Image (cartoon, rainbow, N blue to C red; front, side, top):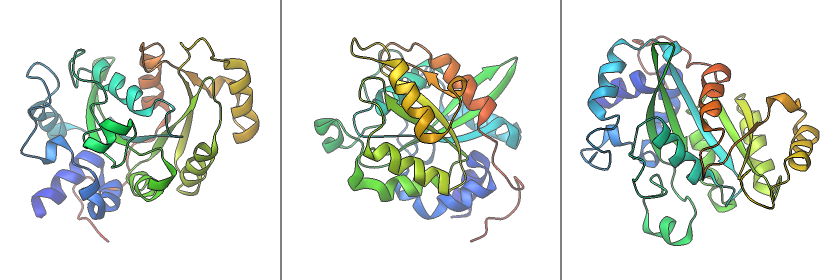
Length: 248
């Protein structure tokens, strides 16, 4: 238990680790498991992240979730970020974070998953802890537990469908938790995409300026690099003392 607590504190930061320690059953993280073979040998692996954890300062860590209405492309975008940072190979199977059979059969996320991404900028390495969340309304409890371990979220909106019921519900959860919210329009490569309409909808509904809204395609990867930069710049690092004890 003490080893797990220490690893959580190093990986997520003290405050987020305290929130996360009661819900680790929802986070089958490859670094907390004996089975990490899903990561390719030439990708970012457990030993590399562990080595970085030994020297990483809190300002080198970002804990974030991607929240969205069901089918707005959250799992596909998560996969793209994993590939872009070298966490998995480009040819890894689709929807890496959706591991349960029911998730793969129905194309939805049921259980929250986590993955640690190593991202380098200006010669400095950062650990981006992506805590995946379900988008379906039936799994809102999973979303709330995920958000308790984060400092920021990507609020994903489909470029053709616009804001939906679960978009609003997830936004309110993140807002009530005091998290930094980065609005993101996804699926901009679709023929039916209507960026001006959806961007205006986000501005009016959430009261955010147009220049704070990012546009991406999880499928093609367009805009994904800018998204990683925004996570570094806009999501605050975890709070608390790195070597302090976990408290309830």
